[in-house]
Image (cartoon, rainbow, N blue to C red; front, side, top):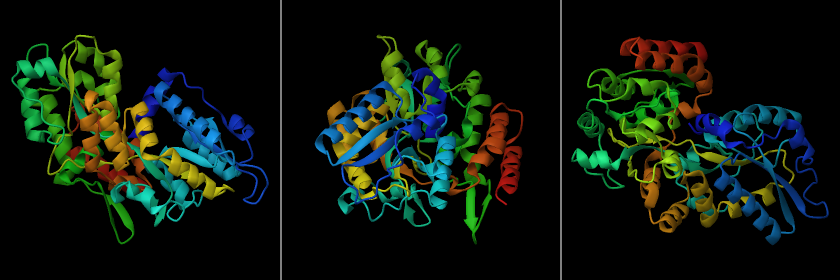
Length: 431
């Protein structure tokens, strides 16, 4: 979920990509042992890329260094497009940063290979208590907590306020989103010649669909007796069918948006062509930065099925098992992710902090404006999803799920054929 977002936008940010050679030149992997003289030196490989987020990260590292002369942290810039291959090479070569920024769904393989430290005994109970157990579960593999989850992304709805008002549709409160039936009915009300009620940007549909499928307890990946397989029953079909119905039955969603990313839909949204944009909570940033001065927009809470549950795939910070300064690295992490700092990092990325107090501080600091009240409230329904723990998920997603979902949403295959392709793909990958 998060990785696709950053890959999609990275080119526009002009963030310098630091290659393996540059990383290797930064130091010796935390080289000295715990008892060596002089300050402990840590390298922090960060994937921050937005201007405000970059500044927040660098400012915090500088503040830490000024206040902790005995533990000095070097900020190393990484890139979401190349981080996976970089880490594979660095871990295998024994030259990896002490602290690594990534995402929960991607650190599992490194955790299982023994490259990441179990943090459960290195972090204080007070610190751990700020983050819900369900969110910690996303970074827990084989009983080991190998990442600190700190930023979350949820799926909300951005809407044109003037069009809602004109249609007599009230904006729901931050803690009371529409049901799918209500969302679809309101999209129908907002549809007229030259205007669609919604635009589903489904260029990369898999994470999106599997996220929202949790609304109906759709799991897709089922594990029994140590074996995992893909199953597509009524629960898994519910969300794809509803989106398909909006496209081809009620025709309240724009077919042309299917091949778009969330940002691609903005010109049409600002021009009144689409009334609502289901998408990432981070899309609010583009609203603030790009919307015309006279354009009124609102953030609507996540849509509800049987629940408002969505998959939590937080950004994480891990400590390399090869680090010679694990205790100092954990000390830095607790400081770097204290409530005030975590709130600042979340604000810079337009995402949701995992910490309860950080969430409260962020809403207080922003007054809940620009959708921060909705963003904060959405964190309560984020949980670990089965696909996040499936080793074969990345391959299944790329080779089978994405092409099949794209065909289905393009109305080229039936819902049953979609299910068959997803199940068959699982058999190929999950052997």
